[in-house]
Every structure is written in C-alpha cells, then in structure tokens.
Length: 185
Image (cartoon, rainbow, N blue to C red; front, side):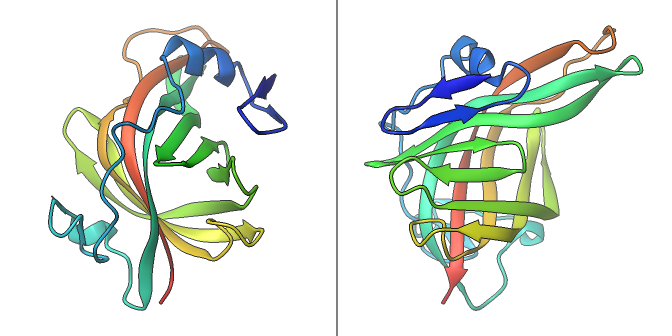
C-alpha cells in the first residue's frame, strides 16, 4: 500500500499499516516531544531512569529523542497472534520520522535511515517491552546517518491481542514510546 507523508515521496507500507495508523489517530504532532537525552543511563537530566538491560554502551552519545505514536501490527498464524511489524510516526520539534518494518526509522526531512536489531529488552507491565537495538545499516548523512544504537523507552500499549483469531487476520494495536538515537561519541 502506498502512503504519502508530508514533504515525503510515496512510501510502501505492508498489510494495511497506513489504514492502521489512521485508525489509531497517528499524526506528526510533536507537541508532546520529550527532552533530549542527557546521558546513556538517564533521559532529560534524570527525568526517566533507563533499566540496566537497555543501557547504551559507553562511547555513544544521544543525537535525537523522538516521541512515537502508532501501532504494533500482529498477524494470526496457526491460531496465534504473532508480531508482524511496527507502523508509527515519530516527532520532536521540527524533526519527524516514520518507523516501519525492519525495524527501520526514516527521517521525513533528510531521508536518512537506520535499521536495527534488538539486542536487549526490559519488560513493562501492560505494555510492549523497552528495547535496546543495535544499528545494522544506515543510509544518508542526516539525523540517522551515523546512528549506532536505538533505545525504545517509556512504552505504553502495543501488546498482542488476546483470544481466538483466524489465520491471515491482522490487527494493529495502538502504542506510544520514546525513541532515543545514539551515535559514537
């Protein structure tokens, strides 16, 4: 499915993610943007404590912090809900990005992109886990061009649906999180 984001070329999102984003009321509203990360172990000068499991290794510094609103997309496989892909819009001030399958994050301003792979998690009651992801690929010289690690923090919602399902059925579950992007110091 193709989606047009403000100031961005058409983007292909799988399995109706655009419709799911619309249903979740996701937009590029950055009015709730978080404070920049102060260190690898605390955000906003100690506003949020980062669990030990998802702390970024020494030698990296925070380069961007963005709030995300979107959906975690699940698909029914063999009668069980399994995670398929994220679909979210991130924002902080004038910076905006999209988050999609990969997992990938792409700047809507400069086209830079980072893909990552989870290396650690920390459970959150009633929400998807907080994560530490290591960058596996970057593109461009913009905000994401030199990213080495990504933290997913302050998660709300996004847990897999419960109950019976029919194979092939998909469902988007609204979630919110704060993503902190790091580069070598």
